[in-house]
Length: 334
Image (tube, rainbow, N blue to C red; front, side):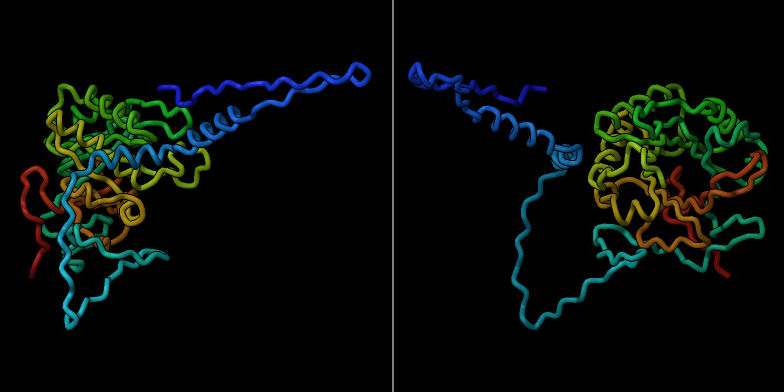
């Protein structure tokens, strides 16, 4: 990085010598202009935060559009009032650039085992080393047809070291051997574009030799109730940018991509209209997905029970078959 601080030379003005009988040591007056300029420059540099850098980088990625010609509104024309989405204590204006959720809310059926079905939607799981050794044939026999497998993660402490999931290779081989379609995700704690690129290259390195049926997912999340998480204070603009940068690298390498979020990230942080060329994977733990906008995979529980897995596992419904690029699957009708 070039040195942005110009050095300003101080000058000393010679004082007249006092008479011999009153001669005292006189401190020369100094010109403080250089020090003031240096202080101002340092303050300016300190003010350029990661959020500011994010903004300008994000801006450079956006397409340049000509300003639309705005016609005057006839006096007799009535303007419909803006509609809002209620989320917690927030009233959020509807984004007209995003498709809306058109799933039949009455079509989601909760079974006695906690498994939710929706017509022909596919049951899936997402797994990591937390699930330990998995009997993937038993998983397949229990009705699971797809899995999104953690490839690795970045730690949320100050160092932010990237680590390969200890069960990644085993899960990839065994899941596909059982006939299960697979995609992968990387749990990100990136705080800069450089770290996002670092994570993308890490993923590409470890994907070498594998064939995927489902997308690669950039899973950026805040760490709940942690005062030391390195991602604390990250802006929505930066989160959106990190998704764009990561996905660009995956797509250049020939992989499909998908955006993961919960409702808080989606409503309050991410600019999803800039990411809408990707399928969306929603995390919302409830019996039916009331999230306002469209999505293709719904993670509906983190306490699922599936044969072949000890302990809890995340459960998902694929509402649009991403392996076949079909239309949304319809709810069962009587």
